[in-house]
Figure 1 (cartoon, helix red, strand yellow):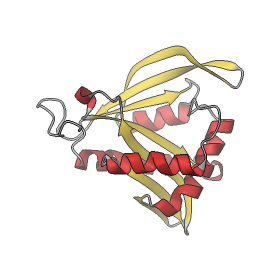
Figure 2: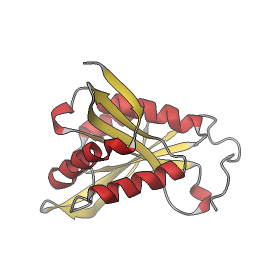
Figure 3: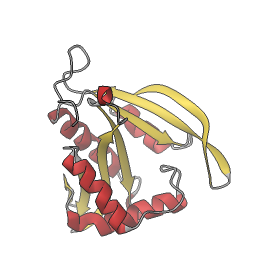
Figure 4: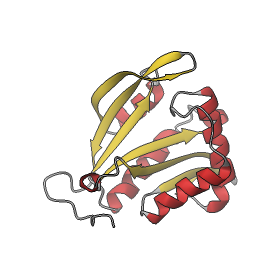
Length: 179
């Protein structure tokens, strides 16, 4: 395997949309119930790219096996230095360490952009793989929201974790206020 972690491109949208569709239909990482069309996935990516948020893919022999991005945690201006991470891995590539590699690169890219805190909002307390990867990379438990979503015939909780990034929280943010 010659895995490459790189910035995403518009040409990756088909693979990204397919990976996400599988996660929406079969998993609990996303609380969406219907997978968005490719055009919507492209629109979402474009918004993040315009906001200077990192959006990465893991590629092996030209095939996208996973993707990760950091996006705004909340839309209010005071949250501008906090990002929320999202990571999705193709079903045939899961449990091979790709998620950890993507998250490691995403943390680095977020620090380079001077984000100060990364929040993980993990769908389902049973997502031990995702929880373990975040914990291994220094995320701390921040809480659990019990039964906040209903999908696949059951109530799902959300696990919240957080990690201080880069220069940390000891000085004011340097990121400008959004327009």
